[in-house]
Length: 402
Ligand code: AMP
Ligand code: MG
Image (tube, rainbow, N blue to C red; front, top):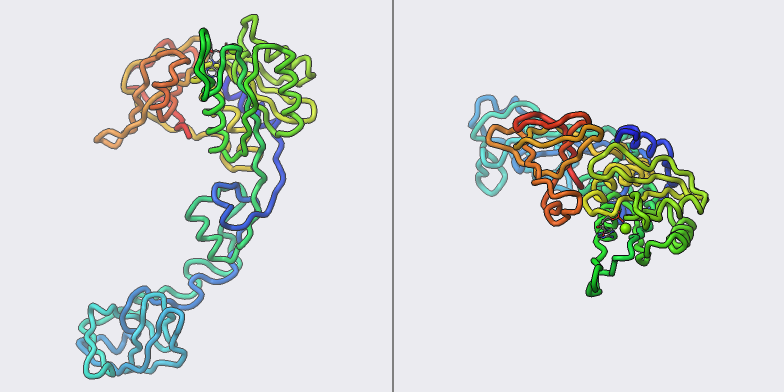
């Protein structure tokens, strides 16, 4: 059996990068950036006032209070384009250009306009440079502000807009087909009969896959028959970049997924990982090149194996900088059992205590079928293989679930 780390490495090795497409800016949110974003102007593009107040020469204010003659007004979008002289002031608004000759802005709260608006009294002295952001202080024209591989977030949308990117080059979204296998399964809108359950895996897999940036298509449920499943996978392989099945990968007589793969001539890279839950997990390449993930049937195993392996492939296909979920150090709130031959990924809730420590509360181990409890977990606490138990208060690694 290979380790989780080895399995992740194999997935990354065999995952091809998809191409690039141009999208209109409003559609770029959540996509993986595929080009350098370069500033087409200085920011700010001119010396900009940070305050409403008066642009002045600081030297005129050293013996404040002092009266200065108001010679003009500079507003955002309509600057005052002449040169200001010593003894003068220009009324100025936040975001407006600072006139030539001024070296500081005194905020309006520390001033008092006199007469008919032709004189302002500065109640306090102002330091040179006060409340002015110089042209190019934030960004210089030509600077690269974003690089390929980041997932575009809300704040980045503003950056793209500010530098004129009405269209953005992003990686193509992987097309993912999801197939649930199991003769016991019925769809969400059906009433389960005797010995039947509703398929829930298709919905968690689809949701995780969409969160990772893919376009998902759910195929009809498949019974535990090799020929049916084979047909279903073959058809999906022609139209999708990734095929994800759940169920049918353990050692039972009706676990037909691997038979179907073999008959199809798929190249199987691994079929067992030293992982708890989720030991039986198949990663293969289908004829034609589509990647195949055969996840176990248990809903909790589905979530664990998807987020370790399938999510990694989906993000790597998009050229994401960080396709693997980051590990953090957490403190265990209670003692948990490990496994001698497998690395355990235990569902847990993360919380910070009053001392600022990140604490993991592992769920009572309800087995890999307890997907109702799993719905309340936010993380997986990682217990290395070969460890009998880990005491409450110990530090372990954990990953947050998407
Ligand atoms: P299997 O790996 O096919 O033996 O399935 C293991 C367990 O997961 C069985 O109890 C199945 O009924 C359950 N299971 C399999 N597929 C699904 C599914 N799509 N939705 C919910 N439970 C499932
Ligand atoms: Mg099954």
